[in-house]
Image 1: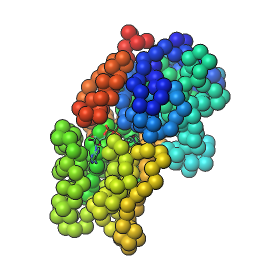
Image 2: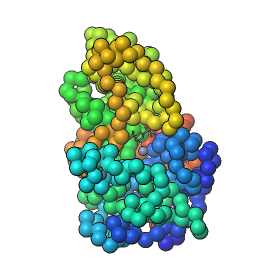
Image 3: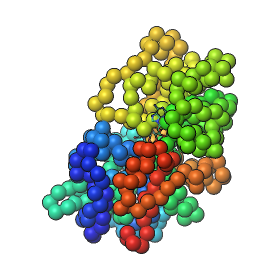
Length: 374
Ligand SMILES: NC(=O)c1ccc[n+]([C@@H]2O[C@H](COP(=O)([O-])OP(=O)(O)OC[C@H]3O[C@@H](n4cnc5c(N)ncnc54)[C@H](O)[C@@H]3O)[C@@H](O)[C@H]2O)c1
Ligand SMILES: [Zn+2]
Ligand SMILES: [Zn+2]
């Protein structure tokens, strides 16, 4: 079918709204009509060239919608089902999936190749050119055709626009504090960078029973939102927060420091580790340049105070366990989804939407699709 998509043709270019050809689902695939797509910072890393993916690229990896077609052999999804996209596929049978670590599924190796899991060909084309859908999804388009490993079915009572956020920002942020971050009642948790991901680390830490939830962001509006959604203290920088974390914890410091800054840099590790308690951990969620190697870190303290520096993808939990769980947290009133989307946009306004993200105007911006797009 012909549809439209936001396409990047090279680094540091604008998103272009163009006509593309979207293939029908082959064996193991599903076509979805999307209701919405969140605007995550990770798509911006494609634009800056910091995440390497073969151009042209169709952005977007945080969507929800309704199944419109299923390919041969698909038994888990049927037309009309409501689904959330999982930015990391979960095949269910590889070694990591088999031991419950679906967020590091072996199919993740192909995440930025553009080649579909089912038959290793391109599902989105322009003439003879194959396009790379971000995370094998490409949700900056009203329709996607993706492998069933990249979808999670949800019940119909969750509004699809809210559900879209579960596909990346909410699951990633929440899990980074409460799952891989291991927050327990009474803990002190610091979250650095309050965007669409970090705000959900604040929510996850609060729900896990943290006593102090300290949110750090240079933008005042972000700090206000963090307070609204569960932060007990806010600061504009790690340097400003450190002496207060020391005071609040009687020198013990934070059990978990979650780094959810928009662009990760090696220089953030040392101040984050300095805020971390003995036996505590720094959870690195933010992404930077794929070739960046340099980190400053006090190795003496790392060893003797038994600290951990822990990378985290999808909050350290699998999409098939985490997305239904987050639906229940939403139903129970523990997870606020309504206030996360601070502005909606049409796909055609996507460059303005990303300018707004970079200017600090949004917690999460969201592209909403309707009859005019379908
Ligand atoms: N690991 C994963 O699974 C995963 C998933 C999604 C996104 N990400 C990454 O997480 C990061 C955050 O994504 P997002 O969509 O929330 O981005 P965002 O742009 O919405 O938010 C980033 C926030 O960080 C703040 N910030 C920037 N520098 C800071 C600093 N030095 N100290 C404190 N705050 C600072 C900004 O003001 C902004 O509010 C990005 O790098 C993204 O690529 C990782
Ligand atoms: Zn994302
Ligand atoms: Zn797998």
